Figure 1 (cartoon, rainbow, N blue to C red):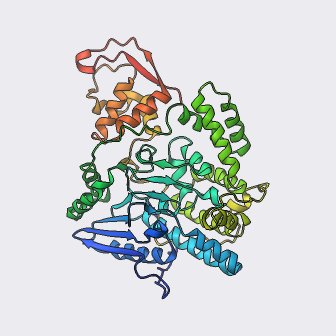
Figure 2 (cartoon, one colour):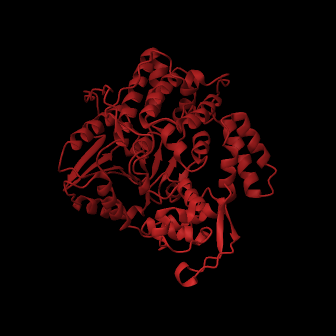
Figure 3 (tube, helix red, strand yellow):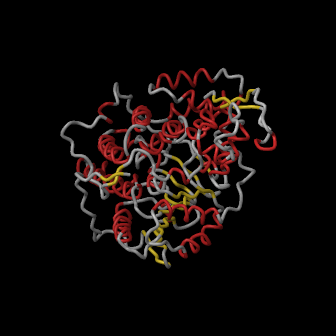
Length: 491
């Protein structure tokens, strides 16, 4: 992480007389500070009143030596946070015109400033993603070092359903998921439920919801030495969370996986929507009935989404992989301003969230998405509350290994010092030609210290992305486990 010293920071917000007094509840227990979103009847949807309170508390706790760990959660059993209160914003735009658009612009500025503050927060921040975690709720959680999914988690970025675009830092987060999974989620608004949010990398841990109160009490007991760094503190917190594992649900298969997961990468690899649709069309004739059914359903889904939204989202996903976390929020604020003036936003929100008729009448797609994404010269960039910036998540190691990490181990094998050390190969020992799948699984299981879900994730990736071939190595079975095969990455 680095600080942008020349960046002017935004002034902190002030609570307003019209803010609700109890829409967020704060609590202190020993070293833990909790944020509880308290609008259960609205599925804890985020509004400006809540965002202002959270920002001010986070900045206060940032300076406190007594605040060790931050936990954010939602009131009730249904939702962590089902999104930003876009229904209220759309009503403002509809009723007040330009004045409503300005209020919407100010709301999105505050929301993105809060999300960036969370993404760069200097203390362990733990999000209980228990229940609906969508849109604005994703912004409060996905950039945190600790994200706990439960059997009740329902994660989605549903913005293309309502004539908007995947925001709250989705430009940064989604392209950094494995393969083209993030692009698929961005365009289709597909849900990841329960443990699948964990397998996909949206969450870093999976616990049963009944374990969360005990975990919260245990986190309150943690103490850190003054000289312990943020990574050291994060490792302590991660190990503490792992203590409350009760196992993975064996009745919920990994989804998407296998042939459908491979089809996602094939179909959503292009920056051209026409190419995406053509690729899906080719999958209709697949000999795999599950793939052909998935392709048919996905084509129908894209047909129902805002044509403008899915085109902007597709380009956003391809560009966002090169943006820093700061740039992602700056550009998204510009994009949000553009969408506030586009008819699809009020039309989509009204049809889906207000009248709930479900079927919106969309505008024809634009000839180009440039006006939505390319920041105009002279446009004032969004000021943020933190000077910190980075190009990749600094604590990505807390979650399951990514496909890129697995690919590197498969391709480089015993040439990696970490592989030799984990598998007990000394520098002078003979090295097999390559790693078997079993050895790759063992390597990640050992380096991740037996973390729940690692074996399942690595096996699925290896089955989908590699093939095993015989090797002529004459291997000492006692010392090297009798490796007779090596796996080759086929992508």
